Amino acid sequence: MSKKCRFCESLDDVKRVKKRFYVCSACRPAVYAVINSPDVIEQVWPLLQDRAILPQVRRIKIPWRVEMPEELAAKRHRTQDREQNTWYLIVSEHEKQPVELFMSTAGENDYRLQSHIANLTALTRLISLMLRHIFLGEKITIEKVQNQLQKSSRQSLDLPDMVLSVLNKYSSSGKF
Ligand SMILES: [Zn+2]
Image 1: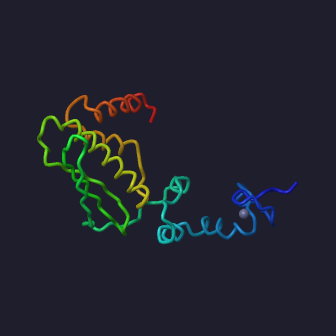
Image 2: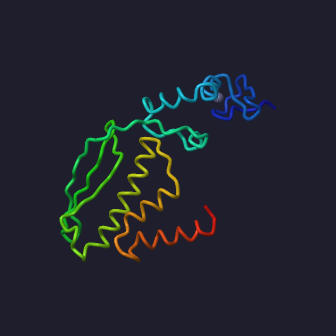
Image 3: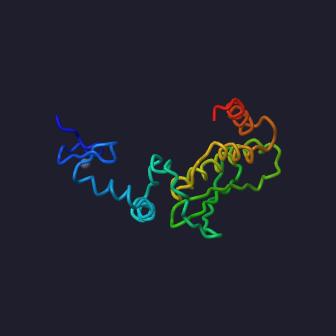
């Protein structure tokens, strides 16, 4: 029985590549392009595809090469929560994609809002991390997640602080 192409399941002229997987004649050029010209693939990909290169490809240590200008265009969105507090969500854009999210509020020093602010800061910081991963290919690491949680916390035992201390239990036990 002949082998199927690993990528499209075709049986057409399937050959084993790099002694690792079976590839049909139609998929072979793409596979060889990845083997022979990973740098070119990496540069072409974001020009033609609106999603990040797959995480499997990232793991082969492709450096983060997207160059971001120092100043990004930003859009500010005014919004109100259900308790009528006003918030501003600021979205930085790079090549028309959202890559960073910030929030601010007039009630920055209002003690009743401190836990709201900590939660929203954690949310926007972690979403920013994900957006940079999706649109710029920045690698997400557990240290970055911990760092963003730490910067979001405003007082001990607020939600970001609680989440961080749970995660820290794993890092101190060497689980990551
Ligand atoms: Zn194929």
